[in-house]
Image (cartoon, rainbow, N blue to C red; front, side):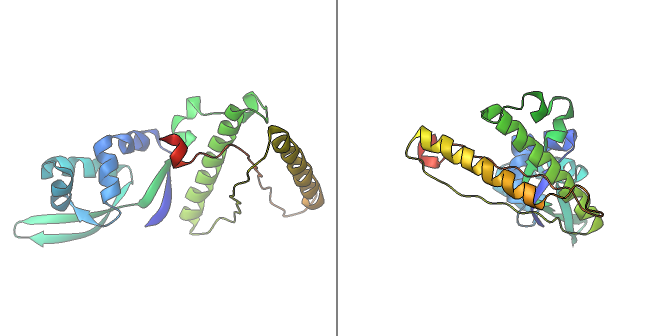
Length: 197
């Protein structure tokens, strides 16, 4: 089972967003049958089976094994991943496009960049899985506390200069066999559980 899977198909996204199917996906981090799930989620086995077949049709759950129990074959299923991310590709007609308003200080532009990142990395993961390869990526995640808005602005300017210098140092337009990489650096206020509540 993958840690994270990307949902790129609109119908699969719709299936996963149904509250009961979403709950079943969460329960199926560990293998389970319609019978065992019915007791956990409070639905009849037949209704659970219906939801499982829908999730299976969209590749969100997979058959682990089949067990004979008298005259019945019990199907044991497991989620295809521990968690899922819906790619903007699933809403292709309305997916965000950072090129529409490239304002590097806009939160909406940052959100469009993040959506592009999800879409692009999702596409890479899907392609790599089909080719049975890994995707070479790198990310940094951290927090910084600024004493003032002026310090935040100075940090952003210095960060932009450092990144620009580093890109200039390593970017080689003429590198034969070279491979382009996208670089996204973001700074935004932290969102933590105590502030959300």
